[in-house]
Picture 1 (cartoon, rainbow, N blue to C red):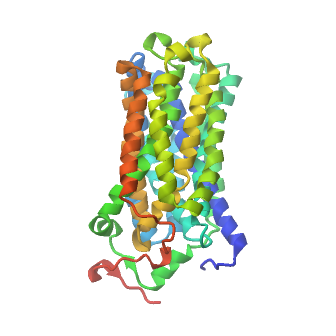
Picture 2 (picture 1 turned 30 degrees about the horizontal axis):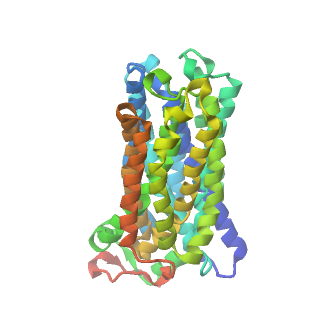
Picture 3 (picture 1 turned 180 degrees about the vertical axis):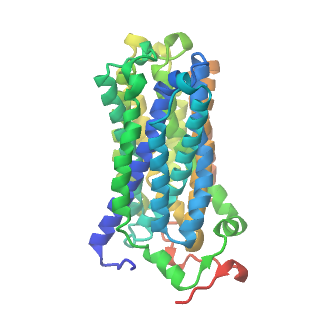
Length: 464
């Protein structure tokens, strides 16, 4: 059953399903990110000391980003051949089961090196699941959108990122309060480190059940259904994308790079820098205090996503992103002011207000840049390779802009000072601006007519 253009209630159900699904997936993904800074260095990498243990934990955090392109290829293949709905169910299941398994893992003190090895395997599985999630949710929204409102419809699954972050970090904040956990004086025998940190991972299975219930009630998107009726299904979507859409893959990857870099600087790296010990060159702020600042700033992230969706439909994706990315470059150059210890202070004397302003500016820019991505990336590719193409671009960018960013930023901050990290962000922003300058505006693209002429042997003809 395909969606009829007048079926507003069903379209609203699709919006709700895409939002709920991405919120759950990002919740699962972010609880690992938070634990990678505050919990895992103590429980899974105790052989390292200080920044060495943190770098080891960050490395396992980055493994998921290496896995995400693999997930986009795997799930993209089935998404372009079998359909968007079934593939989204599979990606949600994989992510949920991997997250639940992390909550059951014994620590290094219990099974030695097998603990970080298993942690890395399940983190890899999380990455594969999320790699298949984003593009499917984006297509669910874009391929059922009202005419002229595609960016507005596509921004709903993007809200899953800040909502998932708020849920994950709000959960951890609540636990640290209940367990009276202080990251600056933590010892492995505390109740929070002994078992309390596991609760978000274990309870995520309830959210996954809700997500599956919502998604199983959906139908296939009308754009994909009509492509099947016309006999335009490909035997190998990935091979076709690399042969015919290599330029779009490259542009899509770098269009997304600055957005990824900005987000993981404002979440994962800044958390490690903020709560790390002053003796190691960090700010020495309490874990709870810093989580509160992050949660407030993420509200700006969520608030500016709808703004970006409206503006992207009004003035175009390319123009909006050029303006916002220029702002990201300028923000990177401002790190020298915001993160100077002469201004910000350390420990109990740290200026929380200035830190909040810094985080809020970054998260506002994040919302403005992230919102249009679920419109512009799918609009670069034809229907029969859209799941694969948009997913591969999005997740290749995750390696360049996200997997490397916390590790590189930790190294730069340690050797050259936190102020220098902004230069790294400015460089990522410059690469995105270059990609946008080589990209045409996609606002008026007709998704239904975007079918490449294909080599005959690569097409599976299906009877109407």
